[in-house]
Length: 187
Image 1: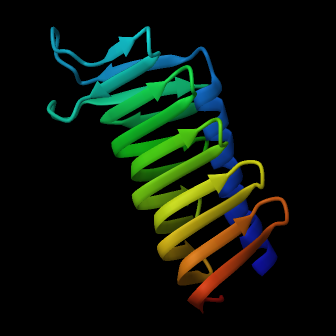
Image 2 (image 1 turned 90 degrees about the vertical axis):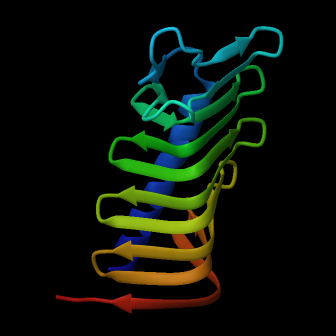
């Protein structure tokens, strides 16, 4: 049963890596400014620096939505450097693909480093598994995910708590660094 749980948790991280790679490297898709009144500046694109910026924090309920190949990225503040393939989404940031959802106050993707990060109230949800932490990093080349600070892994059979969790996707294994505890339920 534990091996099945590790596979479920690593499946969450695999989907995250797909979301990052598809959403930022794509040159086509859809960008929307939702809830922005007519004649209100919603965003700007500088063709010299190749940077798109939008800050919708002053407009209640407004947000930016980027959609590509089934991946939906949303947030109230967006900076997207299309030349360097760097994407930063803040204020209610979320990445959704199929049945997986990543949320946090800050989500960044660094294409050159093949690194996806999230910070401040990070939550990764898929089916009956939820992982929360202060920060999250996914290193694509190594297929390694790290959750740091107040890590909680909740699933139908129990919960793990600790300070630092490392998932090795390809090896289908987890490492708990430092103090960690777990509670299990069985039927």
